[in-house]
Length: 68
Image (cartoon, rainbow, N blue to C red; front, side, top):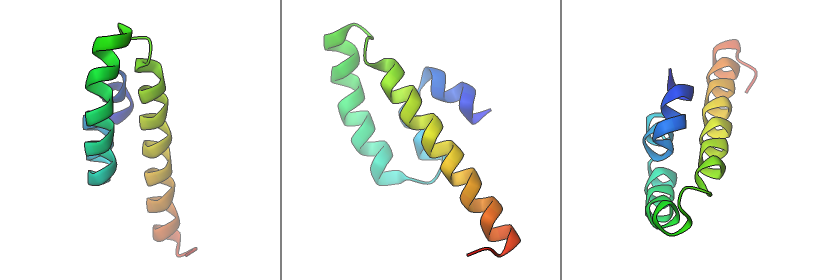
């Protein structure tokens, strides 16, 4: 579900992973990038969101297993 949200609103998707500061910074950069580049930079933010979603899922799996 979060991966689909990352396609449309990457900053919100990043916020839902629990990375508040990163989401704010991405939002501040994302809006002008969308406006000035016409959406050409949007895939970069999608990729960043997907990486952060995957990383947070891996951290949860590791903490459940006790592999800290």
